[in-house]
Length: 246
Ligand SMILES: *Cc1c(COP(=O)(O)O)cnc(C)c1O
Image 1: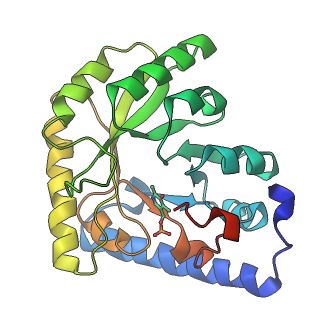
Image 2: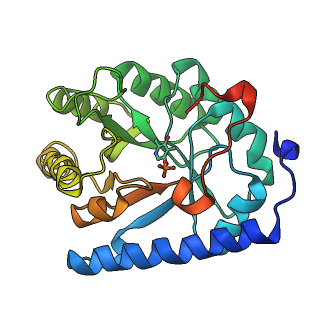
Image 3: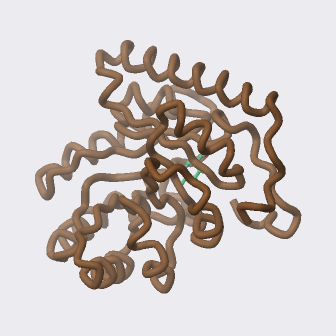
């Protein structure tokens, strides 16, 4: 797929640089508003549908962490990425695809069942590594979303804690889309409280929440990692045959 991308125009590259500057300013402002240090917040570039050329431009500007949603797209593009980039998996992951990515990512953010955690544990053990993961929480309680409920989270965290080749480092959430900032903050604050409570079960250090439309609120409410796609790379252009993918 890497070679399906047309070369980027100078205007496209300039737009990414401009958007990155805006995002960094917003992150700094949100940190300041919350009395937090900017170094507490990691900016992840979410790469779905984006050409490796633009992704590398962001990496060259110091965006070190990339977020991948789809196994096939990731495998087809990764050879073109800067070797310095750190890749985390953030999409829904089928257990039968774990093996394809286990040695190519540094963290898996989207663990929402013991079944998946066990598959990661098995694959990581075969590689002789311990894979850090985040547990994905369905904080909005939406029936259509993946993620474990807040009620089931402690049980899953305890069970994952017993696995030898998987380590839970934090929580991740994709809240329902919402344009009201007060409502965004209620959701993110609920996540932050859950994150604090779970520290009694495991020492968590990553709270992954906030995307293009709500990362400022997420940071004010305690996010340590924000996942940003369209605000950095522009609106996603899906190829016609892939328009069912999100
Ligand atoms: C696509 C995606 C993002 C980024 O979405 P934007 O709104 O474009 O910033 C973040 N997290 C996950 C899990 C995604 O799939």
